[in-house]
Image (cartoon, rainbow, N blue to C red; front, side, top):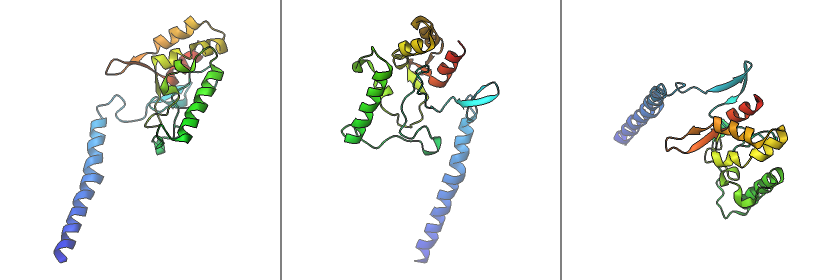
Length: 183
């Protein structure tokens, strides 16, 4: 019994050192090689923080691009998705409500033209980006709300494009909306 207790204490100490000391220091060390050294990249407008580049936020006005829905209301403290599967009645109802809302605010768009990412939450619930297709499907609504031509809004989208390591084009919704405000 004494041997088992001593072994349990040694294992607990080893896990503590590995998981509480070594692992966090390793992650912190790796983060030093990222552009912001692991810190949040806050976006400021006139010295006021309006958001963070890495965390999505809600935009519901017609004059703004809408991002991907969040199962956690963009709360970075509880990052995560929904555990509801595609056959869950509550999930189906939620997606249908999002689709119906999108169609009301974007007349002229067919349900089949709405990218799935605008109707379904991401795995983290914090995704700040949308695909080029998701941005372009919203252009007509924003052009009308801002009294601009669709060509001007499309140009803003194209000037805001980034590419994933795989080469897929996407836009950061916060930065795209700030670019609209600068028009």
